[in-house]
Length: 139
Image (cartoon, rainbow, N blue to C red; front, side, top):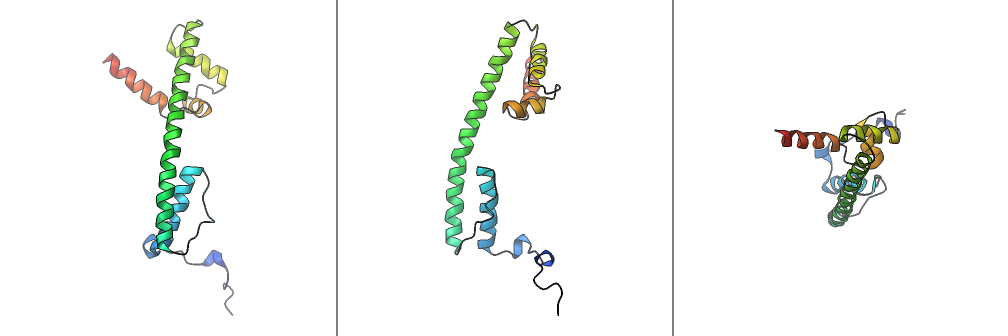
């Protein structure tokens, strides 16, 4: 009697190339669903390749709508943040650097730019890209 029979932990996993087109499309759907909705659709299985293709195409369209809204919201948060920086400068900060230190202090981010970006919903590369843009203006 095989002691490993029925033990899925010991099952051999297929490589991507060994998966059928339907299985590949199911994997693509699950991963794309996570990109769109934030959770993998591990429950997703279909009967036909045609249905999987249609579902992936529909999910791609939905994703494009979601990603466009997210981009608009991110841009709105950048504008709001820049307005906040200006308010802090107008309130007495002598420079942008001082205003940013004050904002870091108010947000309890220990001067960690990425943490501030996370807390305020800014792009993670926001301060890096801003520094590059400002350096280019100086040159």
